[in-house]
Length: 162
Image 1 (tube, rainbow, N blue to C red):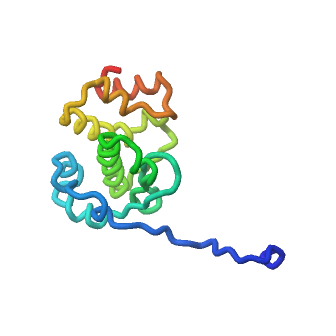
Image 2: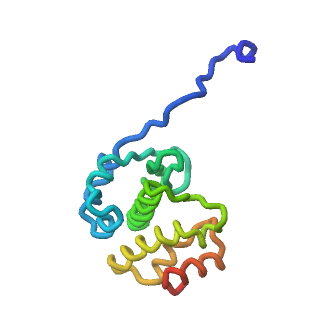
């Protein structure tokens, strides 16, 4: 079939990733991050890779090898506080991945998934440390894939009044 197309397409490619610490510095000094990784905080962050995606969206953790995937568009145009809190959130997922947890357990909806609730707890704790009120935290929690009922369920599990 390839000969009919008169082109060659290399279909096995490697994802190019960069060291996290080349783009995000000082996270090893943040108390909440130190609590996530403990004594291995500096080592984990130095070894963590980040992939900048051309797709719209936010950020997440690869379920193949646990590296961060961040939308370059979001990084450039998103709210700085939201980006910071998302990084905290995703670092919890990195730790969960390292511990063998299923980050995408289909037995749970997004707002009920234990890995998501744990990650949000760390992010919300940091949001409160920064002085964000419940209204602003609810704004942070709300996403386009979450309806009002799911937002309220998540907020309730995080002791946030939305």
